[in-house]
Image 1: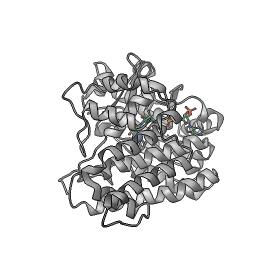
Image 2 (image 1 turned 90 degrees about the vertical axis):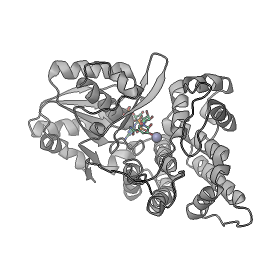
Image 3 (image 1 turned 30 degrees about the horizontal axis):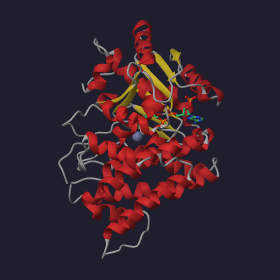
Image 4 (image 1 turned 30 degrees about the vertical axis):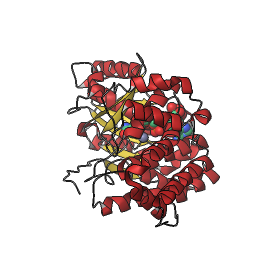
Length: 389
Ligand code: NZQ
Ligand code: ZN
């Protein structure tokens, strides 16, 4: 196991009706003027936004609003939010929605405290200072409610990039699984795929002797395999929704990833798909992950076979572990298909002729690489896109 530090200071408030406590927690964490930030309208239609506003009013916390965050959130609205926060003296941003609203809120929070262009953070500058962010989560997916990351797309060139820093971790996150019951099945499945992908990015490591985090990763995956079909069959299944919602947080606040090298190339490869076609991030991952796994499997067949046996219940073929490993990848594809996810370019609506552009946008050039489990060159990435056709 590698040396590590782990500090995850978000205060989680989990369960039914908890959104009514939003005002209480904003006050408790020192918010005196709030920007409520939300997406394209699901929180208006469901009445959630009104409940959150009432709760702020009850605590006499003044607020302003900025809606309209698109899935795969854009820089344009972030600039608007930064201006608004400065003009109105906002000191706390409350994101009400999914990963997109939360990531946009984090970008505004970092930008409002920075004199330069907030995009600097998405080109590698670590975020060390930001306004406080709280969240009321409406979809189990990105894990942004507990992470120190934010992913934004810059309209100019449609560049989708991530920023990171401990200052971006929300000070509190309200997780009411009931709020996820209004999700369309496709969004539920895309979110679930993202959660599983956050585990895979950590599971495929070259670090030895990481039994505890291996087992934690497997627990999250087993939970998802059990619970996702239950919510697809019955969207109102509260208990299954609750398990998935907490799995989404556990998968990405790095509890299951400490002390081990992590990969993250599949996320980078996927971000080009969601940047170009504006598809759900999880749907893009359903296409990329099986292809990536197939491409890199030979690097450590035993790790893939271990996953196949422990998570997918495959029989270990000791004479030919590669067969077991491949069976595991096949089971993943079947699972993703069964929950309604696309598993290739055609099903996603992506085009073969765009592959060179996507590879180029990754900016690896002739010599650059991405990922850790296997360091991938631009040529490798091209092969992975082709395997996903
Ligand atoms: O915009 P509204 O109207 O709210 O609709 C949203 C949106 O269309 C809808 N939705 C959300 N909750 C709902 C609902 N509809 C009905 N009922 C509800 N309860 O679902 C759609 C997707 O929402 P979005 O916020 O985009 O989903 P998600 O949480 O999957 O976030 C995706 C974004 O997060 C980034 C992705 O790249 C993508 O941009 N990621 C962020 C990470 C992080 N910050 O740590 C890590 C991830 O790997 C990921 O890259
Ligand atoms: Zn993700």
